[in-house]
Length: 393
Ligand SMILES: Cc1cc2nc3c(=O)[nH]c(=O)nc-3n(C[C@H](O)[C@H](O)[C@H](O)COP(=O)(O)OP(=O)(O)OC[C@H]3O[C@@H](n4cnc5c(N)ncnc54)[C@H](O)[C@@H]3O)c2cc1C
Image (cartoon, rainbow, N blue to C red; front, top):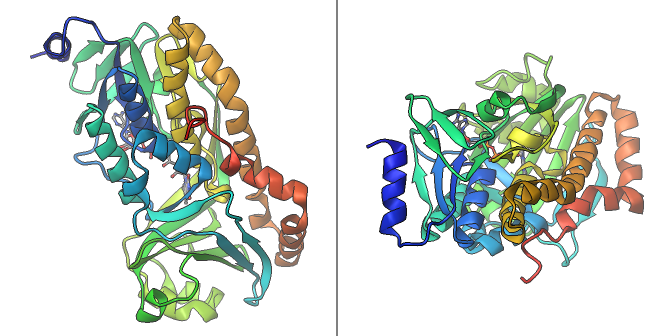
């Protein structure tokens, strides 16, 4: 049966009233959040994921107050953060392993560090509970402003809304010519999970993140479950030795002799990703909305890429509910939501610049910026934001 016929059959089986239909491409944080939010508002939603299963790359993730509120609104919060530590303390250490800055989140803003797959599984379960159909092995290749979605196997479907949530290399976004700027940044990261030792399991500070610097290399140490530590190694993209996978452990131990035990425990399963920044001319074209990294990829320096993607997925559904005319809804959605995402991109980009600075200048900057109330406000604005659609929580 063609996708269109199958869709019509589903609609008629569900009753006489024609529900609005949405086809979402990409089952990452953004796509699944949008799927839940639209289904909660009565849309008939289908998610297309090109992979065989819903698997996320990247080991662990920080989810701040803003993202946690979205997860709550979508009914995914409890599953997403169960057993995850509250990551409310962050220490930055210099090349001599001395603490140069410390940030503690107060009780007004929660932050958890979580195994990524747990959050994706929680969102996918919530989506299914809301009636979303999730299709794996389903790759979309193009979309038109009039609502036609084309698939890699030659099939096409017509729908009321297409959501392009297909990540940084979004084929849908590119098929619509929406890209304004794509900038590969100077740095990148290898991410891994490592099992906790007995001492780590019994740590008195189970949610403390430590950022160790050595030259232009960094090790970010984040407990992210009862049993696991999320380790992110960052480096300049031209540092071929540091970005090699499997890890060149001897080299990393020379940079971080005080972390030799941890480095020895790291496995060979990490992956390297270069950071990038993406800006669009517009977040929508006709019946197609673009969300998540496809619309606004940003470096991870304040841990808000998925946070923004989930916020924009939820707010998209809220605006489509608020306005009868979908094009008015999409225009107003972008007008209201984009400034915060733009701010998040600016701050995150700015906080990546010290990577390339001499260590002494970087240490001076980190010390100063952790004491500046203005800088702390800029850095934490997104995390403290009350996302659209979560006002009643
Ligand atoms: C080192 C690092 C650390 C980070 N840390 C954090 C953090 O702590 N907190 C935070 O909020 N963010 C963090 N981020 C950012 C976060 O990972 C991304 O913003 C987030 O994963 C983007 O989600 P997404 O759903 O937009 O895209 P993706 O996660 O890329 O999902 C896109 C999905 O679409 C599928 N897909 C792609 N093309 C097609 C197609 N043609 N058809 C069908 N399916 C398709 C893919 O298989 C994938 O499943 C970090 C990023 C990096 C690199």
